[in-house]
Length: 86
Image (cartoon, rainbow, N blue to C red; front, side, top):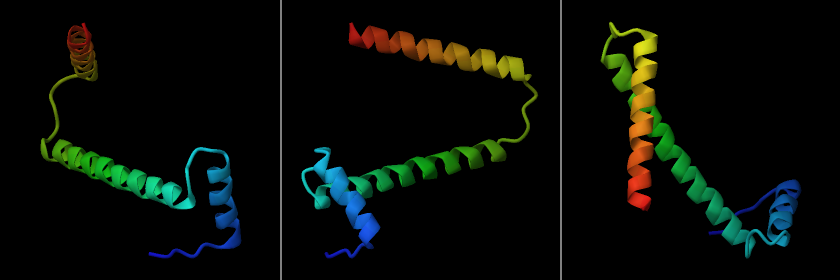
């Protein structure tokens, strides 16, 4: 596969490679494609979560209750990670 870039973009890619962050321009492009794939997966998951939330209807819980539950969940996950690391 060959890719043509305008001079400004080619210069930018070459500068990224010369900084030592990437072994070659191909390496840089591969990294961009991988990041784009990861972004698309995260975006799709976010859209699915939003749709799930919309489909679940309106909650009768208060904002304070939801925040308190979220904090408990985060604390529980942090404790579990600490136990796994030990």
